[in-house]
Length: 232
Image 1 (tube, rainbow, N blue to C red):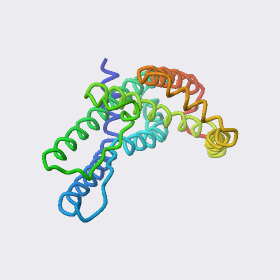
Image 2 (cartoon, rainbow, N blue to C red):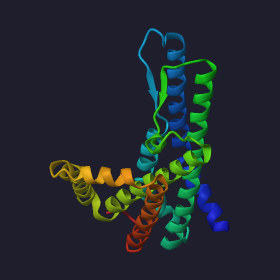
Image 3 (cartoon, rainbow, N blue to C red):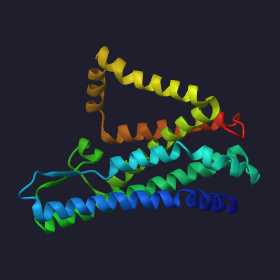
Image 4 (tube, rainbow, N blue to C red):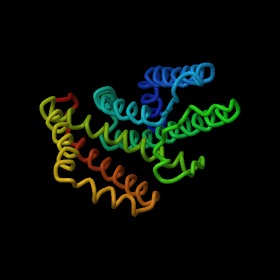
């Protein structure tokens, strides 16, 4: 338990400054949008606000540098790679939940003040609206937690590839990933994919994404066992 607490403290301190800067900029943009729309909205166009998508990108980019910033230090402290991945996994879960609560609370505050000030020109963009009009607090937190966990795991996957195979291997992997949507467009594979998503429920999609994230994290943990202390 002390090892987990110590790991949480180190991981939190490692990204404390980045989190403060990111959330400060994001909230400043939201407040600026509110100010402009409140006083000049009737003369300008409508505004669309999205809190979740920038957070997904931030989480993914942060996780893509996690191993380089923390793994050598933890190994010097005598923590095994397996224990390191367990602690990082628990930290990812807590970090995703915290981010999801912040996103949902921010959306609720924006919705409250837009209704209070009778602002009709601000629209919130969030993935939950793809599954219907339900914006219940628990549903939004659950969806954002899974999406943030997937973003962190995806970023960590990119990090382990760069960490083990160097720049050439990392960018080769990115190139292969970019070929997937291009191939889907060329052969029109996206049509049956959209039809499949339209037929399944939101719970099924979110649960599948959660299971996929866990399996992906397990694969990353296996790949890290043979990784050296210093990146390639």
